Image 1: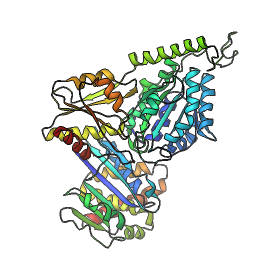
Image 2 (image 1 turned 135 degrees about the vertical axis):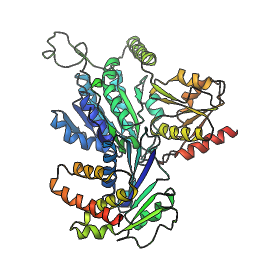
Image 3 (image 1 turned 90 degrees about the vertical axis):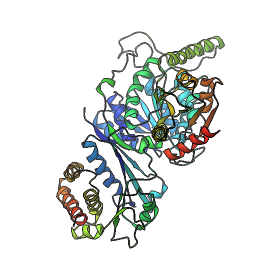
Image 4 (image 1 turned 180 degrees about the horizontal axis):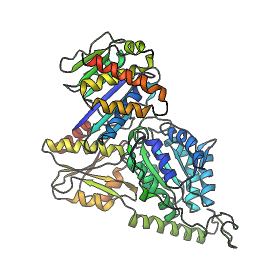
Length: 357
Length: 178
């Protein structure tokens, strides 16, 4: 496999093509505009469609349309753009269509800034759209992992007939790292004849398919929501992904951190080790479903006295960690939210402060 | 071992490209690399910079407060970043545009008039490549042949630029190793 040096945004675009997605509709926004720039050139080369919508709202319904027709389709945006797509995403969830969204997060709220942030955690994991609406949320910590998650996202979206969102921060989009596009993650689109409005002639069937999110009958809507809930429950059973670092021996502090921030924590953890201070790290790769048990187990270690959430938000992940830890250990937060990525030295200071308490 | 190089200068001086060529070269030697740009609003008119992290292990934090080395193409970037360089690192100063020094006695300050050298080659835009050649030769961060190969690869699709850029690298090397 050839290793190439690529910017995260471009690698995300290429990964979607390698995953067999030939439809990309988007509206540009910093810090992810290079995905659109890259695919505006690349999609026509592979016979795919690049289309710039007139707004993110329009884009979300273009995604809905293509997904309802059984096409693999994806879009990328950044925080304010995802907010605009929120309504369409809820419709797509309600209509049970597979699609892939990528949010290269920037600082907020409002226009905020254009630098890296992780402040859309709660939006992605709990409030992506109105109604009982959940997405599978994956968080890459490197350009390579972004590639792999994008390639995995399409079959996962089809498995659940539910959108998947990749939650990266601005640095994942802007950074260049070596990447390979693993052949084993290529996948053929699933057969959607049972439900997609792909045209009765193309699927050689007399069955009429209807894609909708409207259920005026209360019993039918309740049953529909129970069906959706069963899918979210199944995600919790089958899709939790995480990585642990330094959890084998004793440690007094457990850090929970994801994305770029988790790499900074990893560096901090290694430096603390050289000073004789042992710290462990759980890095969730899926944020919904959250690796509750892994966090609980790591926090329950006898030697562990504190759990620290390190994130580029004002502590949005803390409630998921507290829920997982179930009161066994105090959970605190360290982070920055203006676009500056905390350095390993700053994380080390936060850990040492905690050890002193 | 991990090392970091910060390239800094005006937007338009080819800062990001120098960093990219170095990153490509290191990747081709099977090292781990991360190329981290500044993409803030300061890019227009102000200081543009990128950091290249090179390591033989998976790279943790791509955010580096204290790089091992600095290539400063203009005065604001030298003033902004010189103090952050780790002791013992190379600080390459584009003496064509920077009259002041790093004011450090614990780094290897290398003053090369890269803009004038590039003008002498008939292409002032190659100043970044002159700087890259000088930096690699002085720091020995990679073998010089590796960076030459990376320059050839970078300009593969614009072959007429290859000779000129290799010449720029070479002039940088000469200036750095008298």
